Length: 180
Length: 333
Image (cartoon, rainbow over all chains, first blue to last red):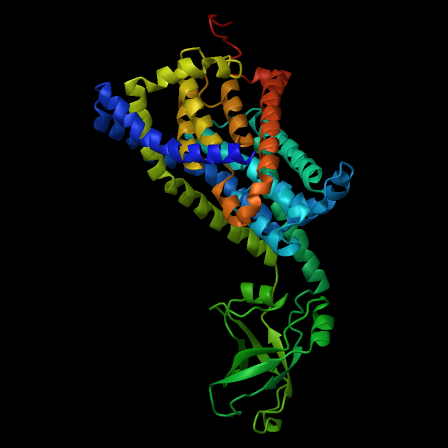
């Protein structure tokens, strides 16, 4: 396991250099006007970033309000008995709810939990596994669909949340299995 | 669905904020207008003529808890300043120091500014102070505090709107870099070479995408960057992939099945290298968790892909498919 992990992290060092150096070099060999093409593509950077703004504003302000309102505490209190049935501990429930909503918020929760339960606790391990194995679903939806002006997202949110829910449950079970 | 979730977030925020605030009002959680009994000491002696002088406020823990109905243990003393004017005496508690709830909240919403908690000093008998070394009873009345949560959600809405724009604009540089490199890759034929290479793996996931389409190459780059935990590079690749998929989309406003699939794969986040942020938070502890993370991320990817396929077959979802009315190869109804 350790060997595979070090191999992967070794490879990770080279992915960006290969792209940043390899693409222009190969382009040069193929007689592509590399500088002109680069600038042509890079011009899009600004436009794409600006296009994302309304989508991200819509998502983030709603999530920010939700967090500030204190609704989270109620949600946790309401879901706790339901999830206890499948062996899901209430201590990591805030993390499970927060993770798809905000990246910075859930990172902050990991810190809070380390302070509260200690780094070696099962709860922190579960929360960290959740953090490491899923993405901020709503942010990804806003950025990826925003960049191409897709407004009707169809089943994207349902799929993202299904995967998140599954990941949260699996994280709890696997940490219990490995460490408890 | 996003319409309902989005409106749900906004409306629930309002409802809960209002509920909390009305509860606070009903229980008088901030004891508006009622003086908090304290004792004051003047460490540098009391000067009746000074307009501002240092003062130390002594708080009785048990008294504090009964007064606010909390179980928080306040510190025994707080440093502050006594401001005397013709209008009366104001007591200002020192700036950045930690205050117990609900005083911290009162400080947060009070208009007195500079992040300091200021209260009117009452029941203070200047005649009995003497040299100021002996504690003298007094009481503090703080500014009226109402609708704390209501204030908080308004502030959050504005702050997060700013944050959203900052995040988007912060992406400009990285987006420009990788979109530029991708342009070279397209012109040099790298993307097409990549498409031929990844076609056997990606076609089953994206059957709607023609087999020689550059979208598959962009998706492959996006997945590679994800696997190696390179979020910065993954986003521009993912966006380019979306743009390529958009060229196949007859609607332009509605997501197609391949778009949802790409999103599903990205939200499930296949990472073999844990995110840098988690590494920073957990330190070397992370080594124990790698296995758990890889298993979880792998299984959730399988579930995401399955869900994308299954939900896509639901009648309602199917009907909204922009590619549904005119399947590839036919002329449409």
